[in-house]
Length: 264
Image (cartoon, rainbow, N blue to C red; front, side):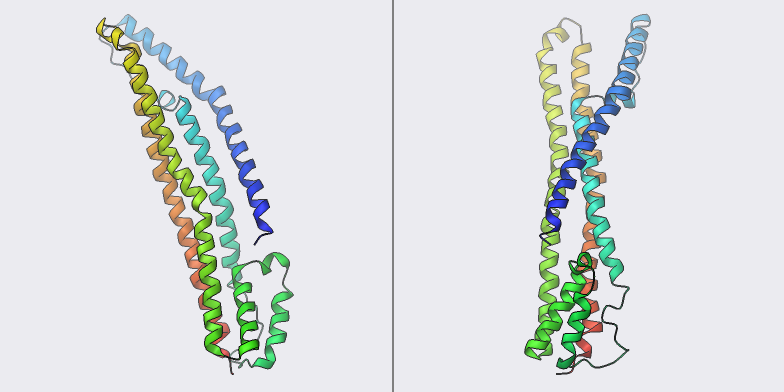
């Protein structure tokens, strides 16, 4: 798995860069111009009619820098989720293949381990890094060395358990992003409330436009951040479920196609 680490790191860096470019371009060309035009229209309507009730706009809700940062982090996390989900799906498809290529119910003795190991090592290098071939190869080599079925079962379980722990640890970056998004929203809340308090003297004089605008920044940033976090955590749990099923299915595959057919 060490060979795949640099490529994944490069993917994460470039996906973050691309997410920032896309989101920032949309904000500059669409969202902020639309929000500015809407706010100017609302200001003109309120000036013409003192009893006018100000309307809300989606463009205004998402126009600030905190919301932009949240969308960048969301796209980055989705890209990483897609990368890991695609890898898990590719490994899941391998479970539908007969890697040992043995007749049904044919017993496997210690003398067969060399041929079976060669069949696994003849797979493409990319497939050899998957969990199922590694678990099968470890089990076959353990049986050839010990001729003990219980040791084979333990070896397969250890490989699957270590892979499950590795997959769990690799989700830490996504969990960090899911934690960072609400934090960015709270930063917007603090910034908005701070700006509102800084304009409190204007509110005393009767000018509350600046105060309401700053409070809008506070509430809008928190609202968007929490909504994005809820959606993102749903996909994180779906990926975790897919990976857990992969580990359990691989352990079941080894037990069904190899361990129960071993003959010491």
